[in-house]
Image (cartoon, rainbow, N blue to C red):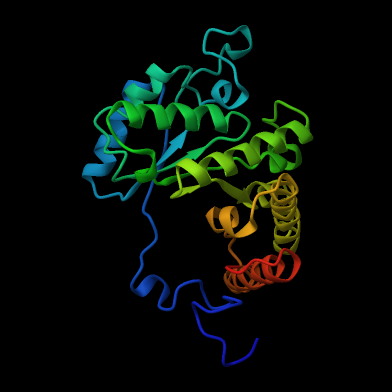
Length: 263
């Protein structure tokens, strides 16, 4: 790294903003999902009153796998690790009284991300909120489900089609939405080293970008809405080096491999 490199400038080794968190704090959100949409809504309202600046939705396993709560395969799992959302009405209850045009909402959902995002968007529209005002993230990282978690539903190729459907739709209709959160966290928790975490995460990231480019999307239209989710282990200096290397490496991949003007 050159000593002349500055934060906020390519290749972003020292950070993506010139003054980083001294002037631009990260979004404060607590991962939460209770046994029903009503209970979870009460929790979200409480968190917002306590000063959080965003919401993070935890869904139960049937919702993640595309099962309704009354399906035989959902027995014993409904509301166990998050909130069950089966219908638009459930989402409306979940977001009741929540200013969706003011609060950034992160949804940890993958195989059924398109469905849950559609519910969220329609719930906002029924409040009279334009889609262009919505801010948030869907995880939408299906490849790491095959690698590290297992909540995939479809084969890889049609799954990538759905992922890029979300890129295209949000680019046209929900421009402030982060369309994917490419996740190294789960890969690290599955037993990888820090270096392997970056390697497999970026391999997935390259696959998503290539799928979208092959579809005919412009890289500078969709890639700026990508986000990443990495683990932070106890080896403090290794993790610092990992995050610095990740910023630098991804910027170079985007510029040199995909010709991005805004890497």
